[in-house]
Image (cartoon, rainbow, N blue to C red; front, side):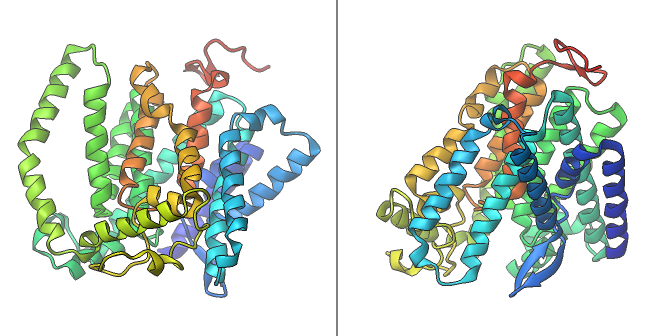
Length: 429
């Protein structure tokens, strides 16, 4: 099976390069986001194929920047991310004396790699048609990776009945199933964060008619089942809350949609009690959930004690013990909260600037008439809601998605597509 996957990826690589040439490399990086194969390791640190692709592309991008092929105006739109990168590196240098292992340097390198990859891809996108191809590539890749997860789920001897009887499983059995479905991600919650964004991208492309009718429902069904198989409670909650936000915040003028909205809200309210009981059942048996409040308290203590530039990327786990103020249900030197991780490691300055990068998209979407933009923003919102319970700071899919969202909303890329050309723009000759 592994060899077949490698062969498929090789064929796709050749396809992208032949059809799209230079841009084909960008599409390939986006396509490969969920396929995080480890190809070798250095001192026990796994190097993935996605790392190699990003480093190779960044090298090409830097060369084109030096030659002047990439204009300052192309990078200026993404300057908030560049400034955030500078804050990250500065905080690292200030706190360099606290580093005691190479793994911390790897944390920094992975984050820098994610940030620069997003900037490099964003600065090379020249028009709206490139963005649409990127989003469609993203959706196809998410569908394929979900289909592979579904295949592994059933090939491992599980069935739909397994999903319907999760409440009778022990914690060990639950996590055994959960991790067996995460084929390419070492953490299924991180896979869930990728699929959350992917599902909203696919919905946006579907409602804006960028996908043919026969594909849209198939893609969504496979991705949603893939998300279900991650067994990520944080992702389930994020998806549900995001849907509720959409139903309440987005103006619906069509009466059929209004009735659907009222019906969905009613269903959510009716099922709220059973949901609360299920969550309570999990809380009473899962130490990883019970330990959250204690871990968050440590993160808050660390953030308050280091308010400006934090303790540095990767250092929070090293100095973790110094900020424990009460007994922990389960010792785990990670906060399981992205915002606390950022405030503890980069400081409140870093956290505020992080939020400012995409802040306008958290409210601007509700007044937009662009369907794809609306669902791109909902994808961002779902990721951030899930991040209240997880801490994937260096997730490359997030740092590639954010520049694409910024570009899509900019005046430079305004206009509806028609036959590959944006309405309101002059077709290229």
